[in-house]
Amino acid sequence: MSKEKVILAYSGGLDTSIIIPWLIENYDYEVIAVAGDVGQGEELEPLHEKALRSGASKLYIEDLKEEFVTDYIFPTLKAGAVYEGKYLLGTSFARPVIAKRLVEIARREGAVAICHGATGKGNDQVRFELTIKALAPDLKIIAPWRIWSIRSREEEIDYAEAHHIPLTVSKKKIYSMDRNLWHLSHEGADLEDPWNEPKDSLLEICVPPTQAPDEPEYVTIDWEKGVPTAVNGVKYGPVELIETLNAIGARHGVGICDMVENRLVGMKSRGVYENPAGSILYAAHHDLESIVLDRATSHYKEAVAIRFAELVYDGWWFTPLREALSAFVDSTQQVVTGTTRMKLYKGSVVSAGIQSPYSLYSEEFATFGADEVYDQKDAGGFINLFGLPLKMRALMLEKNQKG
Image (cartoon, rainbow, N blue to C red; front, side, top):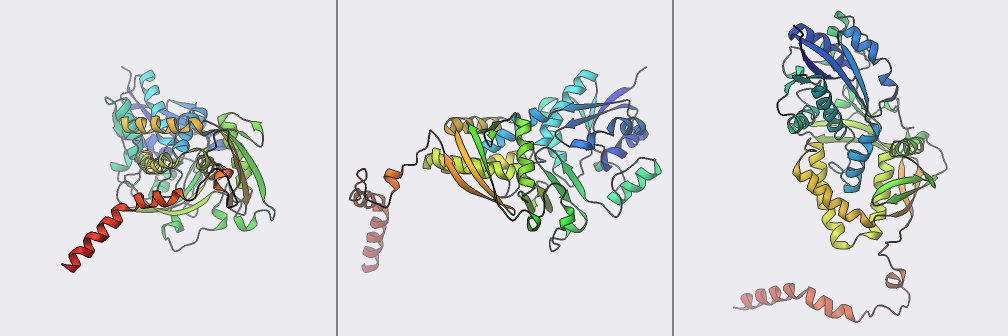
């Protein structure tokens, strides 16, 4: 009789490397590993041999990069969603696209369970599991970090060494990192003390800003309905566009974010993120919106962006509210078409020009010089009506003070 199957979200990192033998030791399941390729690069090359040597019956490596960009990154970019003013959600929206594919393969393989390596202290456990619950509520979920006796990365390393599992980390180099097409995150070790400044040696994508070129570089981005389509006049597909901007931004030290964030599970955590393409795109998209969106829509969209970011961070991608907010955002993006020019210099991204056929900006109206289109006398009546509630309240207070 064949064994029941479990699908493991497999990265080849420390956590998921030891989960394969742990599952075999503790469950009577056939372990099928699934690695979602969201732009990890060379990290995926050795996974086939490593997964099979660790005890998995097979490994799927699924190319999710284009789906990741078009269905997750771009909708979040269009929303202008940034968590707590700094975090561009690189890990957050990578989890639902991976979990969605885990469910699809679980159905294909007839699996009864899905296992992930997210810790019981982190946000990823929520993101994985909410996606699975939304798409396949019948599947069992196994979260080893909430079950096993291992309590630290040092103990994980000991377990791996005892089971002859090759590692790329050690007790001396023990940062927890997550890489995808959008960003690279660093957590743990000396970063756990917020007083410690991140070392330049920590960076793996970006040049430290102090070592960036002494001359600025200008980059133009073309947009169609809120989606970037070309860089410096050259049209790219979604994945290639992100890769191109990553290379440009990285050499100028753009996109390094050091922050202490509020995790969903209640604690604060400190992370350092490298996000060159994202930092350029967010700044450019905001600039383009500034000339095409009216005041009321722009201000309301700012409130939507905060809520959208919270939904993405908290793992609520596959929800009616996120879908409804995306519908609102898509409506606002019908006029977000044009070209932005950005100046990159030693870690900074500065606007250097914006143009759009849908621009609401009028030099004729905004000029400080003489004009024939705006009667400044009209402002007096507007202010009288706009300030009437203040005047009525002041008269009331004055009357009561006299009484």
